[in-house]
Length: 262
Image (cartoon, rainbow, N blue to C red; front, top):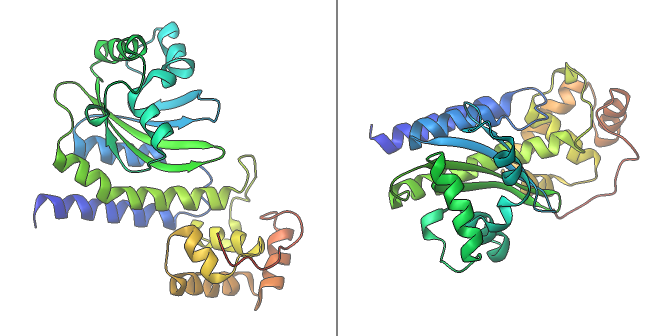
């Protein structure tokens, strides 16, 4: 088995483990960061960019500096001059991208130099970003960083290959979580995270094909998840499933009308 096949198998194993977890309501970014760090041989960060361009981040192994002024720069001002962040903001692209491939001139020379000086000081001036969620509430991405040469074509190809699996995990978390503050009972009636995601979308009125599109999976897979949901809840249709889910605190409000698109 070649190196690329071994790397791919590791991602398939991790993704299968993450989507089987019961009711995952937060992105399991640390496990993903560990595998990214291992395969790309770099530092990794899970970043959340809000609509106001403020940034939060969780760097595997801890922040490379304890300078609060510098950290505050990255939370507030840095994103506005970061070449990669501005690339995604201005192009609308969600494909993986590296710092070295962003054309110059996308940010001011002064702003770029401030950002690059900060990154060079902690050996993170070469970066590769893998977006995994983009929407009205902001953007999630995994940022890979090191110093030296830009990430090569092989690394970018690997990022493209694993991105759909990371996106799959993120979609499930968003579907399970509902709103960010929603509470989920610990046992979740024995449902896996994937089954809970399907149940919540069903209760919102989504049809089977629409659920499949939302979760990036096949309609046949959704049908199988629904069979498991009905069996575990002891029901036979959507209305009864909704009532049980509402009583368990898994959903709020009235059951939605059929939604055929996502």
